[in-house]
Length: 320
Image (cartoon, rainbow, N blue to C red):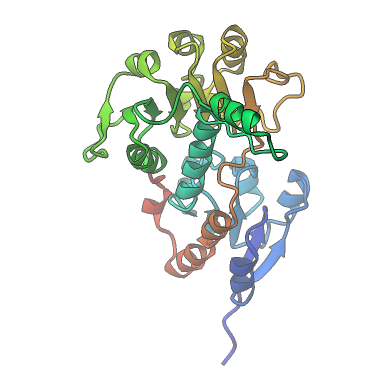
């Protein structure tokens, strides 16, 4: 009796080694991680499934080059880079990992909050008794997490976990969301976007990639913030108007902006955000922990299950 043919999986972006080894034992994996888009499209003809992360755009042109494609697996949370309608029209199933990086992103946000509120300078030498006491006095920070107000824009999985962390740090937490949240954390209270902007000491953005969120955070929003506000964006780059962000940082030197996502990516070399001393720019690394990467990479299990199950249009709906 002939063996069942192994499915052909095209790997467009790198995944963690252990899930990749697991997949290699069960499928024929084509490594296309170093190919440009044109070369990638040339390799798609026989592929039954495609694995992507952030930067591979799954659009009609890509689907036209993949007549045998049955599953697209996103090793990550958002599906902004995948044309869901086009996939649905071709009975292509989408699988992703909506909870895999939640803890890592919350860690990043918390570290940025603590970096801004409680900068800690270690001893560089053995001080004299007088200098010891002087260093202790100068280390007293004017603000702390205790009783500070955290405003969360978007109370999904990450926003909810961040609210729980804020509660443990004795922060007052408010949030705003397009949807009615049925069971918010007990320490979090719903407010309007404008009230959140005006009253929050810290603002953290956690909205999804829907078109209506483009430039949600604009000059009007920044103009409502406190002059010493801490602003953090780990959602999508296009949510924040970079010119408005730069204007706010320039006009308010006591404010701190931490931006992990950008529009475009990589960030434009002539961005006004460079060289501003109160702006921290990181290269889309909020979820960059080994454990989060591995958890996202285990989307390969769902990929093979989807190939076995056949078309499943309900899986094309992004998880909130």
